[in-house]
Length: 269
Length: 103
Image: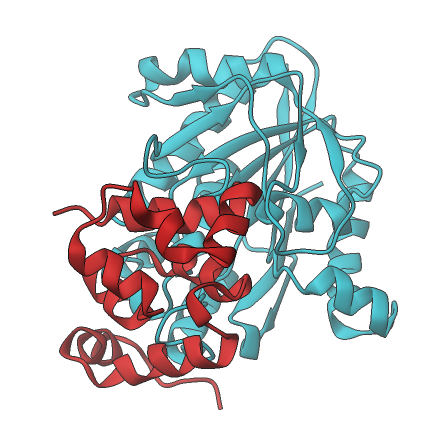
């Protein structure tokens, strides 16, 4: 049977790859990604479920899913120009992705599916730092965290719970890890650019650190997240991750306060 | 009235290089055949992203316009227009919900 072995949360700031290339491995950002990458290497997952909010690159308002599973043989990108990273081809754990899509309705989730898709920097900046060889197949699960109306936090948590049930019922012996991509307080190209919501950061970090999931779900309303920044709904990816891994405290949780995001690791091996 | 067509212009500015080139060379011509409202067309051609934001265009998409220097926008002029919106009721309502900023 497949099992969930670890969870990871990181930001996907587009300028980080270039900045780290310039400032070297001792820079704060390089060290934080490396700390997460070392945990990921240690648990040796066979597949990586990636909760991600596409930035209106893969999807657009002509056809915008709230939840969508990417089930193809592979994906590639970035399909945007924000981050200076190589063009990557990433294998997809297609069978498991199909399994999530197929099992969804029985668990109350009628998911969209895409069988041919590219991904933007929000998937590939994390993978650029964490799995640069792109050797671990991913199961992309897209959550609309950027274009209101956003799904409720408790719905995203339930989505994570559903994914865990599918993985745990999966017949193949696979070690599956989960990755959440996104920030907690970030405004892109809006009026509040450069204003990081410190109170909201501390609230989110406290709840994550103490595994106070219920409190986090209650606090993370759409209005509160969007007050912290117009893409702060990316927190929903972390909330879905919590649904997968259950009520656990992180073994590593390090913020970059001024950026409005954090790096987290959940392990229990 | 949906602001969809404005969002679409912004999306194509990022994902449709020939269209981006036309927007750059002949903005009015590039928009001519698109079903924009008069107000949307005027705001786009004037680089009035503050107005487009207030009409409901997605800021992430609007940002593509300054990234590519379209409609006379620069990162600086874009940022100035957006900052000026902080005094509007909608943004003040957001600010009231927000917490203290990181120092």
